[in-house]
Image (cartoon, rainbow, N blue to C red):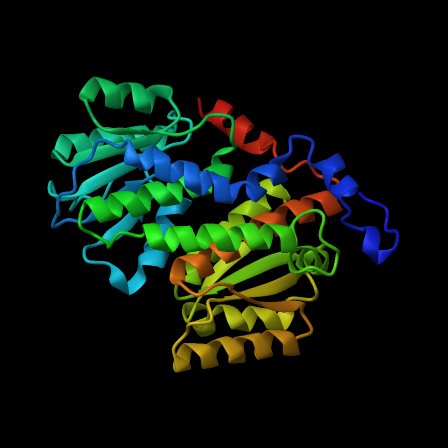
Length: 352
């Protein structure tokens, strides 16, 4: 545990660097360049545009699946066909042949995704593989299935820019969404400016560091509303893996029908973060305000975090970027190295 000194010294670059021995924060700050590289890579993907009545199905787990959630949220009401994500061994039993199935696994060895790849092939659906290598890439090459190669050397969760870009492009090529390259260009420019404002060299009063300090010692509950539900899932997973800490996520309006009751007995153990896309309709905006007020009235720490940027993709990616940094700063505050995920590796070995 880091010894408390002055407030200004809690998250200096030196403190962050001592905990983050593998430099995971550098991969977060590199997201703008990751998006640029991802655009170059999708240009090489051998997948001709062709409208499919079944839309797009993405099969993946963990950091390899979150890009699908974020892409779907960014596309929003511009979707022209179904876009959905499956985190399981098998795709949906009603999978249509005329569906493009993206099988995403950074390592290429995720057993659930390998199973889903085979099942989609048995249906006769067209497939695309997104991976660095492994059994999945080898099988795709043998089956003459298009492969989008990813760069090696990243943690799967740090490949979020590549996964999101891959799904956005595949959604466009199968007719499920319009082209999103202009949106991505704007988002890249925004992330570059936010890296200056929120990076390790920023003061402790900057948004990312101040939020991490406020959440320290609590179990954060991250609330999303509309498009930010996908981002809430990302925040939860990043805090779990990077800070090695409990965190949970929920979605409005559903949480207003059950979970708000639990805050009466939170007893200081939990903190709430409400992710505001700044584009909510009047009724949802009212729900967000009331939810924030009810939680704050219990005395629990509560923060409402507003997205930055003009377009849907900018706003979502600004919140992803913020959450990624918050998770690393939370790790640094407790002297935890954010990169190793020993529990996951032990579990995989036990699973055999």
